[in-house]
Structure formats: structure tokens, C-alpha cells
Amino acid sequence: NAGVTQTPKFRILKIGQSMTLQCTQDMNHNYMYWYRQDPGMGLKLIYYSVGAGITDKGEVPNGYNVSRSTTEDFPLRLELAAPSQTSVYFCASSLTVNQPQHFGDGTRLSIL
Amino acid sequence: DAKTTQPTSMDCAEGRAANLPCNHSTISGNEYVYWYRQIHSQGPQYIIHGLKNNETNEMASLIITEDRKSSTLILPHATLRDTAVYYCIVRGTGANNLFFGTGTRLTVIP
Image (tube, rainbow over all chains, first blue to last red):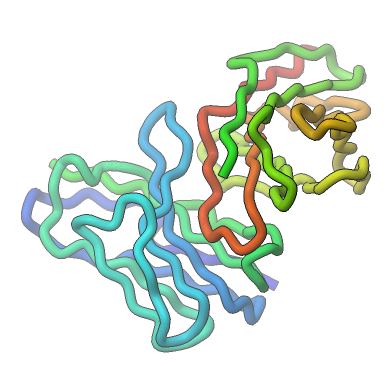
């Protein structure tokens, strides 16, 4: 049972480039989340999804897009990378909204 | 969701109990207390959660005061691998967001 898997683990982008951070879970969880964590800070919610085909904005959605075509996958898209998006990105999932969230190991993204 | 207050850092001797406090004086009746930890550079790991009663699992115990305005996470026999940042989170039923704050950095000393 792999849990929540994120790829890639590390990435360096140039300003203006785009990329997709991948997240997949094999626990058949309905809820999935994307957070970012800046150095020395707690996590902030970017987007979340309550099930396939349904997504909603979190606290810091600007500059990002998501989709949820399947229960397992919840990719995060950066269209025009900016230095302010340099961060560690964590994907999480939970069976229901009140159940604990399970996190992946993160993607470390640097934008230069 | 109610905000929480935690000490910035704590030390604990290996093998001793680690008691991590959390104040959540504005907690409302339907809000749960969750504890997560984050070991260096890894994703947060769920530890335990509770509403009113004290809770215990294989990792830790959670003690919630009767007025629910504070709680304590107890690691009964701390090991070096318990060195991490511990987050106390108060979250209402149905809330999607986990507000992590800056947590308590616990260092277990040999």
C-alpha cells in the first residue's frame, strides 16, 4: 500500500515556465488536498477536491490550477512560474472530511 | 477554526515522557483537536485527535482539559526518532482546511 505518492521530488524551473506536479493515492479516498509550505512556516491550503470532477479553492489558489478526473489522481498545474512559488508542495488525502489526512513526501520546487 | 498557541521549542531526554502543550481558548463545541508531526523535510504525519475525552493510540496520548481550552500531547517514551515539529490543530466538523501554524519543535536528547 503506497499511500500518497508525489512526483517529482525535486524540480527547478525558470520564471515563466509551466509544469504539473503529480499526486496519486491508492487508498480510494474521496478527499484530496494540495498545500504549500514556505521555509519555517506551516502549511497553507492551495486547492482541494471532495471527489472526482469537483474541486475548490483554498487559502492561496492564485497562480495554480487543479483537476480531478479520477479518484486516484489530483495534479497541480503551475502555468507561469514565479519566484514567489518557490516552496515545498504537499499533497494529502482523506477518506472523509473529518478523517485524518495522509500526506505525501512533498515536491521541492525552486523557481529561478 | 479556532487558533492555537504552542511553545516554539522543547527538549526531552530520550526514554522520558514528552509532554507538548497547546492552548486553544477560543475552541467551539464542534471543533476537534488534531495533532500532526513533521519530521525533517517529510510530509506531516497524523498522530491523534479528539473532541472531549482523552484519547490513546499506539503513538501517543491526548489529554484535553474539561473546559477544552487546552490539551497536551504525551509521547510516553520519547526516542531520537521523535525529534520533529509537532502541530496542534483545531478543526471544525466539515472544515476542509488544516491550519498548521508554526508548531513546537521537539528535540529528543540522548
